[in-house]
Length: 549
Image (cartoon, rainbow, N blue to C red; front, side, top):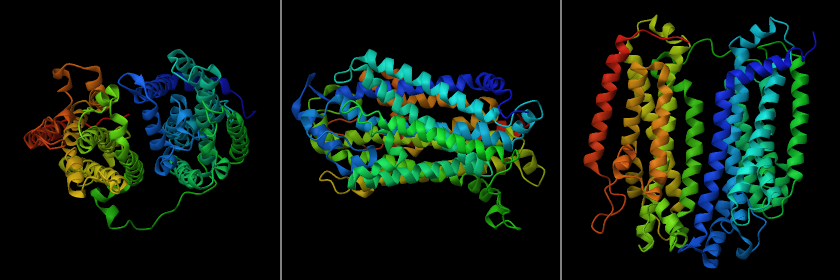
């Protein structure tokens, strides 16, 4: 039987299996980039008109700040006059957008290759007349089709927006192609890693590790010697110099490397058996450590990799927001749209504007950290669906202990991640003239764990009463983020904004109330509700039967 036998049958099966997930993926790319374009157009205006002074401020903030260059990448623009909307968009959005969808790609490819082997799905397919490379090739075709569709749609949308300095279709196509080529290249890198590593978790970890290493390397080369960045495949995402020089060479390099890696992956897969890897799975210790002999230790060990990944990523996010504090006052003055976005008063002093800016920053970081907490707590339901809880309950383990352990671990780790995020924010702004002292920064940043606990208590209710529908919580999280970030700009009714639990953390800012003053009455009430809902969740969890896939 030939290696590619039934490839298109596997392709159709994958498409039928994942078409909803893939459709959401495309929509999220378009929304993410489309919303970014409108935000960048807003920051260039003062009192509704383009301002050279504002342009110079933006240039100094993004292009002249080594910290921002290290985070987002460099720009070929050498002076503020040439730093157009397209130039700043190409510099700041290209790498960040690529990173988001590279991570999604790594997870998807690892699941559809190595995880399917781990769970016996690949072996089931191989029992029929399906070629050895059929599933792998189907995944490659899915990724290629996804990137082509996304690239074309994104280019058309950018063209339709007709933003100043972003009207050339070839430039818009280059931007979209850069994202598509990078995403496809990392799909192939993950595919190669899947041939080498022993399980899906190690594939994701190794691929993320390669991504993180290349990101750190490019931070150094971008600030010290940009020519060395050409040796880094991740840097090819922004070395297109889109909307400035429009260099297509990085696209060619990314695609060429992709097919070289694909050929190597094919060669390795043909030489190994299904569910076998070139790096054998570690035999581990003969006896479990003291930590693993307790339910709490086992739960923490299972979540170690995810915790480190989220903590590291959010620490960097805190640094990004902190790096912007020193220039936020000059950026906001006279810019009504940007002021509304961050709920700022353009007539306020620098210190007041900094405090108001931090309110929005804390909200964003709090909601993102809540996302981590949700992934931590929902592991209780996912482990149950995979029939793993039954093995635990076969021993002397009570429902209360398991429920309480997962709940306390999720609450505790979320609070730690929030602390690390706020710490990154404080470190990045500590050298500025308008820096906020450590104690005040931590108080203002850590009170966001109260609404975070409330959201996790809703997750507990879903696990108890609707365990197959825990994903519904993401609807509320998306609503909270939308209302918190755009509610002021779009002038939604106050009653609708009040449905967002994160809107009740700070007192309403006025002439007599300082910004970022916690509303302790609201916070204690939110915490009390979270505890009550969690207890109700336990009652429901104790009384229901276990579920399975």
